[in-house]
Amino acid sequence: MSADLHAVIDLYSLSRDVKAVDYEPEQFPGAIFKIAEPKAVIILFKNGKMICTGANTEANIKKVLEYASKIISKYVIELVTTPKSSEVKKQAAEAK
Image (cartoon, rainbow, N blue to C red; front, side, top):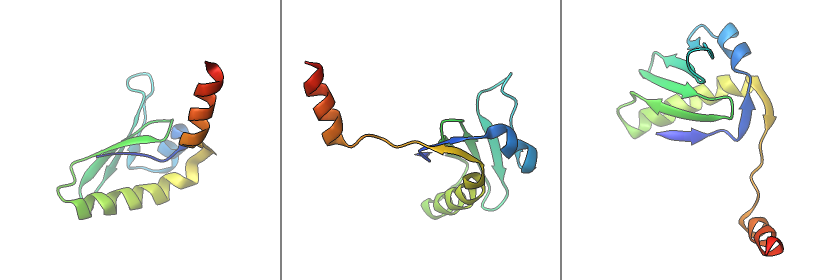
């Protein structure tokens, strides 16, 4: 399961403050967030994208993502807004 928080995350501070998070950017660009209950692992990237693995039911995935989002939200550097589809169409039309 993948998700997007639409935010830039401070992975250095997150890994320093949260013992369940390992971040070694020299080896891998994502932080590894190990969640004990329900058992799962989240791979989190600086751009707010994350991958959840190990959760065996949809309900557990939801619990894991809600839990992780509460913790991660404290380490948001900035929110990233996505343009509305009407704005994208307008920009595409202007580019022609």
